[in-house]
Length: 263
Image (cartoon, rainbow, N blue to C red; front, side, top):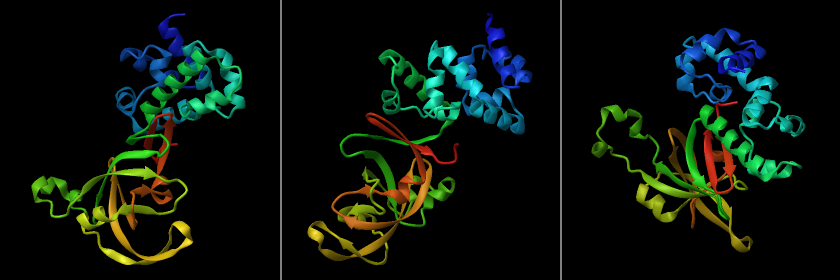
């Protein structure tokens, strides 16, 4: 089968045959190329925003895309297994983790690696990775900017870096998915001069209760800025109020924070 025939038949199976000439013209002549197009590539091939949106929706949701993806990897035999495991479309397959692959029976080690690496490529082509952290005994976000409310960087085009009157600090956080608060060490709170917005009672080790101040801050993760309430503690932690603002991709040692507005 020719390269053009392969792409043409794939797009025709999705009802997207009208785009075949344009894909071939721009050199996207393999099915794997079509499956892993990023936003910039798609805008080049399909300039019309409405048509581009329909193309993306069909590509990511139609089960035929999963068949084509597996065929391009030489792993057709795993289609039924993926379907039975809940990975029924390309959007879901892009979130395949090594853990989920380990839980599937009768997948050879080399094939797991091939599937995972390709799934990661699918994911990276369609998601905006806001930040990366390390995933170990205590999962951590390598760095996030913390600053008081009213961040002047909203107007960065009007201000020079040296003119910014509000301090900020790059902070390493521990991820605490079992907590519903954000904590910062006392010295960071003092350094940034975070404003007090109230008081609360906090249970500490041994069951004792202590009365502590609540602080207001802004947290910058990648290009995302969040208004947060901070509780002082010995360590810096991010709980569910922040974690729920992102999708998460965890791969053994890496924790990717992904834009939430992606299906």
